[in-house]
Image 1 (cartoon, rainbow, N blue to C red):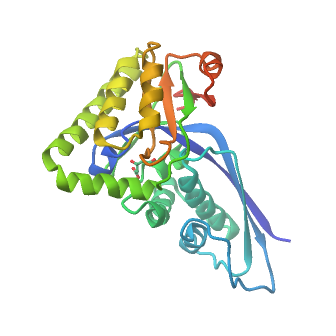
Image 2 (image 1 turned 45 degrees about the horizontal axis):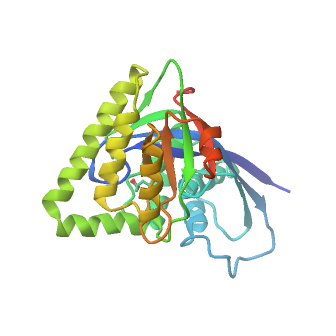
Length: 289
Ligand code: MEV
C-alpha cells in the first residue's frame, strides 16, 4: 500500500511575538521536538466526516499541496508541546507530505508560501514566522514578507521552557486581541511594538557575540506584559523566576484568561527550575544554524 512519511520540528520564539505581525523583526529557532506525518492510501473510500482538527487545517494543507483528501488517510504523531509550533508543523508537514506523495519537489520558499497560507486559516493574520522556523530550521531572523536569514553562533544557548498552563485563547484570538487594543490605544501600543522590535535587534547583536541576554529577555518580557498578552499566573511565575536573577519572557502568542503557554528562561539550570516545582524542559538554540 502506498504511503509517505515526513518529519518536521517545533519552534521557540526567542523574541518578536506579536510585534512581528506588524513588520518588526523576530528571532526564532527550531527545537528538537518532532512531528511525524504519514499519508496512507485509502482506496475505495470517500471522506464523509472528519474529526475536528482546528478549522480543517489538514484538509486545507492537503489541498494546497495538490492532494485530494478523499483517498488518503493522514496520520500524525507529535511530541511538540502546545504553543510551540504545532499548527505550523501540521501545515508545513502535510504540504511536504502531499508533494512527496505526488513525487514532486518543493523548494523552501514555495513551501513557506504554502504553509503560511494554510496557517492563516487558523491564526488569521499570521506573520508567517512559525512556518519559517519549521521549514528553514536552525536560528532565524525573520521580517514579515521581507527577510528570512540564518544566524550562526559559535556555541549554542541553553534555554529552559517553563509551563504556565494552557491558554484558553487560540493564537488567532490573541493576534486579534492585540489588533483590537492597537485600535483603541493606538500610540501607546505602537510604541510598545516598536520597542519590541528594537529589543529583538539588540538580542540578535548580543547573541552574535555570544553575550549575556538575560536583561534584554526581561525587557522583552515586560513589554509583552504591557502589551496585555500575559495572564496573571504567568506574570507571577515570571516575577519569581526574575527574582532568581534569570531572564524570562513568554514565548508565542500568550494568553490572559487561563495560562499563557510557555516561558522561555535564560541563565537557569533545568534541575533548579524543576526543583522549584515547575514543569520544564530544556532546548539548545543556535547550535545547528
Ligand atoms: C505565534 O507563535 C507568534 C505570533 O506573533 C503570531 C504570528 O506571528 O503569526 C503571536
